[in-house]
Image (tube, rainbow, N blue to C red; front, side):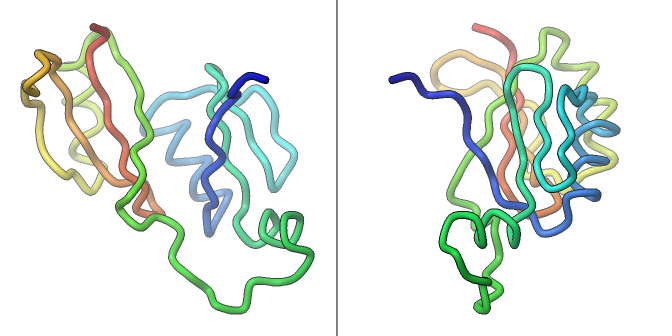
Length: 122
């Protein structure tokens, strides 16, 4: 068995596709309407659709998907340039800082409030 990727639920697949392609600069490799994969294996799924597929019923509770308890981690060689390009367009958690393990990172929220961490490769 091998782990392939996380599959976050999103409330608006088109809004999320635009965010990840336009703001983060990821490229779509497959787009099935309610399910999208990007280069590097990252994927998103329309929450209502995935809930129906997984549980066989509609989700009537309308829970928020991003609950500030999961971090999606990305790496960028030119972290300063990425921060300059991305920060003005997002809900930033904090600017670039050096973490105790010696890596420079910044964190932000995506449209569903999933936490994104963008760091320099170690």
